[in-house]
Image 1 (cartoon, rainbow, N blue to C red):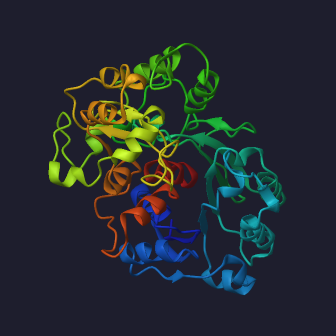
Image 2 (cartoon, rainbow, N blue to C red):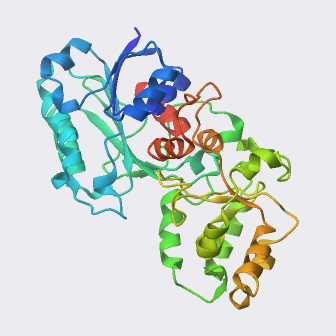
Length: 395
């Protein structure tokens, strides 16, 4: 097979590009397109030889697309119109305009791309945008498969459940049996792609979709133990931490991976401020280096606390339950003294990048602030998951 020519749309910081490299597929990115200036600066820093178009997709004509002569589209359209915490404007949201423009152009291209991979948030699968995508693919004769996949299915201790669609143009089909249903996890039986042994997850484990549904059922269900956590929620987290098919968080840390020991001077930069501890301590998802779980990191991490990602307990001499015991009866000063014993800190941007599968060669330009790093990582994707899907799509 000749080198596959790839068009990377909504290229962000290059997660799709790294996934393509990791997949081992003979391919080259002939162009990347994005309007986010910060993301583009980071992309250019890491892929200086890749042509990068800093413009809107709607600003490109049919001829512009045809000139790229691409065989594959990799894309991750804006997710805000479909997130559960957003307004869920779907196709009425102006941010879907570029995606609908792509669907309008697809049948009119001089040559249909052989492969298409799309990533988006959970919620996209029930949208009108998804219906338009599937309808267009059917009209063009594509074979396609929809999936819901989380990095936990590859043994990575981070929940990031996402919708994916892979499509193949006629003639041709996938090396696995397709289904009209949205698959939970990777297809089985699948092509014999050999992953790292450390990234294999046992088939007996619950799927990410089931885990997420279970979390919803447990919200507000049962007696509160401590830090607004019920017995069911505590049991679920304990079960996740006992799943030895998932790696420990300490494998992904940069500030000392051994039993929570770390460079204190560097670690102090990421400690939670006193104001944050006092106001949001009961809402935090706290993990230890030996845990095998963490919640999804979003673009608000480091700025907002609730629902934006886990925080790390870097001092293990105190149990979380002990630090939170009787907290409501204490003064602010006493609360702060008690909570500070845990040395709770944010994950660093590099650690989040590690959990998301970005290689060590991925770096940020010196002028990109920590807040900007968190934002662009929260908008990105898991490289290992997309790499596996590219292998399945092309094989």
